Every structure is written in structure tokens, then in C-alpha cells.
Image (cartoon, rainbow, N blue to C red; front, side, top):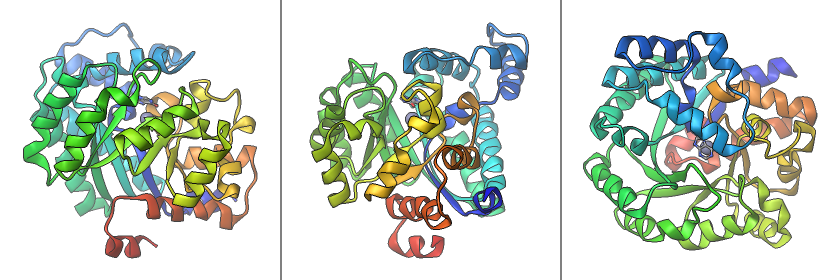
Length: 324
Ligand code: HPA
Ligand code: ZN
């Protein structure tokens, strides 16, 4: 079964490019850019990756992102991720980036975007991996900062397909960004949002109703509301679930307790994704293997995750046919 999983064509829909920064590249960029980080070795960095919850991870994640300064840094970061995609037979990937994590430090929006975009084009040409780019607003920052970020994306609609919402869920409700998302939709951006990762099922309802999103990032706490699960099944609203992330951030105590396979068998359009693989200890294949180890599945069930991801992706119907 492990060979079947390894060679299964995959589609990733929930991946923060800043979360693919491996310790080796972090050290290299810190040195190259003269940025002080509180670690001296790869081992010290990996030892620090013991998270109690989402916030304890985010603190380390933003600190890591500080080493990214130049367009070339963002290019190398993205290219390294695409090479991992190739190993895992990921055919298509929809990537988040957090512009505010960089513009807040004085790095230009265009520096970030052009570095990532150049690698994605090379990935398409040389590796045959198709991709889309989604710009996330940091929900711990205010509405004005999100509006400013949306403004910067105006002239890049050819490179950015949608907007999302990430960072600290608890204390930063969807309602804070209702007007930003309304404007983004009017401007033609597709929309997604993290909801029901650490926060309750009600946050998923709010994201669906207030932000008009077409897919939910995480959403695993939907199981606390039976009528919501029914609605997700009925409307085929996709959930981009990140199993290893959920264990590392203690959303579930262990993989045996994770609800992803139950949701799949209930008929929810769930997908498997890696979120921040450099921090959570696994890329796409690792996530599939970890789920199947704890919840043995048939080949048909495992392949259903890829079919769900194709259905949930932002590629056009004719492009979808090519992935099937
Ligand atoms: N949740 C919220 N924000 C994030 C995450 C996540 O899992 N990863 C990177 N930013
Ligand atoms: Zn995420």
C-alpha cells in the first residue's frame, strides 16, 4: 500500500510557502542576508519545533520567515518545495503566501511575489507541475492592513487567483474581514479561509456565511455540529485538511483520533494537504502514509482524496480533465 500511496498522483490545496522553509535553507539565508536567528545548527532548529498550539507554532514560523529578504530567496524557497512535489508525484499545487509577514518588515510586495512566481513558472516548464497562488491576510493584523495588501494585488491578478485568511484564529473572527473579502470578490478573486482548526464549528459557519468562501482550510471541527456536516456533504464544500499539522499543533491527541477518514466515509469532500511541511515533519506522501497507518483504507478510498482535490481545485474544468 505504501508504494501505491507514493506513486499516487496528488493535488495539494493547502500549503503555506513560508512553511516549507527547511532548517538548512533557513541557516543558509540567515548567513547570506546577515540576519540573526537564535539557532546555530539544523539540530537546534529542529529541537525548537515542539509546539503546544497554533500560536506557539506561528511565533516560530514568523521568526523563520525573517530570513527571506530578496527575490532570489523567495525563488529558492519555492523551487525547493516544487522539487519535493516532484518526488511525491504532486501534479498540481495551490500555494498560500503571507505578504504581510514580509511587507511589515520592509520587504516589498513585488519582491515576494516575483520570486515565488518565477519559481512556479519554472516548475510548470521544467517539472510539469501546474500551480495557483493564493494571497492570505494575517488575521491578527487589522482590516486596514488587509485592505492595503489587497490594493497591492490589484496589478497582479494574472498571478494571484484568490485570497485567504490565516494566522491566529481564536480572537480574530471572520467578521473582522467581511468587508475586505466582499471587495476581493467584487474584484474577481476567489476566496478561501482557515476556519475550525483551533476555533469551534461556529467559525466555519461564519466563514461560509460572512466571507462567501468556496472552500474551507482545515475545518476539522465541523464534526461538533451534525447539521453543518450535513450541509458540507450536501453542498460539496471542500475541506483542505492537514493531518500531520493537526497532530503537531494538538488539534487531535493522535492520528487515531483524527476524523478525516470518518469525514471521507460520511461523504464530505475532504482532501489531504501538508500545510507547513518543514515545521510539521512531512510533505504530501508523509501525510497520506500517516493517515493510512492510523486508519487503514482501500485503494479506492485513498484515491478519492485526489479526486476530491481535483474537484476542489481552482483549475478550469478543461484543465481538471487533464488531471483525472
Ligand atoms: N493555521 C493558521 N495560520 C497558519 C497556519 C495554520 O495552520 N500555517 C501557517 N499559517
Ligand atoms: Zn494553513
